[in-house]
Amino acid sequence: MKNYNNTEVWVIIIASGILTYLIRLSFIKFANESFINKAKEFLSFMPASIFAAIVVSGIFSNGIKDISFGNFKIYASIVALLIALKFKNAIVTILSGLIVVWTLNYLF
Image: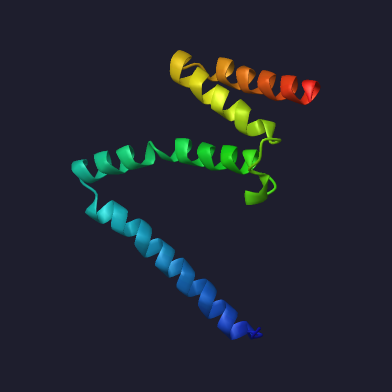
């Protein structure tokens, strides 16, 4: 690993700041109504994709070796997915998944 001196660190910090400023300026300079609408549409998918990543990492917390019949979180996620598709209610979905996990942990 290379050790950087103070001058190199300051050059990197200033260059990063200038690059960040230019990126933000480009959005202001080139933004028009169609670009803004496309950006809004693209960003509307961000909460769902972030939530999906959090959920999948919770289900497979021990990695790929956690795919087994003993991982009750898989069953709970399938039930919760079906409940979500049917009722489209976040609270009912979360409660159904929790009830399945708790029940299976209690029984087995």
